[in-house]
Image (cartoon, rainbow, N blue to C red; front, side, top):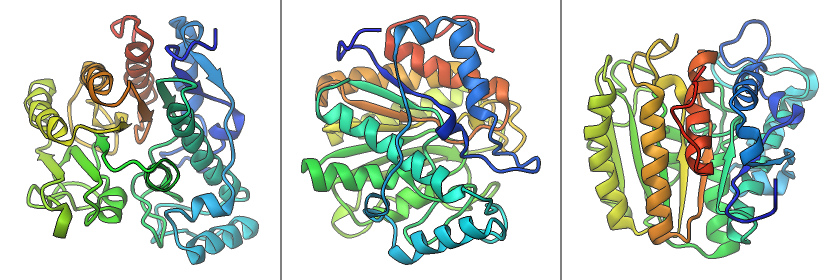
Length: 325
């Protein structure tokens, strides 16, 4: 595929697939392969610019995370055992390198947007939105979303960044990382925290201090379907209209699709196609087309393959209805 900036970038490769936990963990190392097989089956790989993953240096990770957290992950990675949080996120040999690759790849996607290499990019094994500045959480070792936001602010001077999250789980690491930051506008549609990890994301959480009103949390009840999603999306899109963002980040977790083993929403892949299409149009209006999507959660291989490829198809100008997995 050509180097035309209109051609979206898609990051895949063995180094990125290594971010996954062994021993039958829900976030296994086979998730990227399930997505990529569907991409090739649909011929979408011929409509994108396939790029190799990149590994972040510690200094890059520390744009968002504390040095103590980065050091602890390195130590447990070398030891190859133990837990990086309270029990959901186990250490394994090389977990630091795998997590640093997720960060580096999302950073590469964002830098490519800002330097005009491409207008849209997709990182399937990214969107690790639960990690906090000082700790891992919920299968997320480092928060690549948070690192990207800090990069966009520090290196490119952006003052209006939109972060949109349609994963079933609330993006708590991003929300609390930027709760008081008025430059980061958040729109997060998720299952009600009273029924699902991490237990946060109430509608009353709208930002603090100067950032009051820049955050929108829309908790949904278990069983919420595409009709409910569309009503929520209209609210979220109105919020983004106020933001007039310079760039859009999308965490498009597929665990919000019906049948996911770890969540209880009932979207179809068409919800993800709708989100991608509407955000693409918003990005064209306000942000010079710049939009970076990161895969996030999703623990049914068929669901993540369908949802993520719907996003890729929209970015590539292809048919998102084409033979989902």
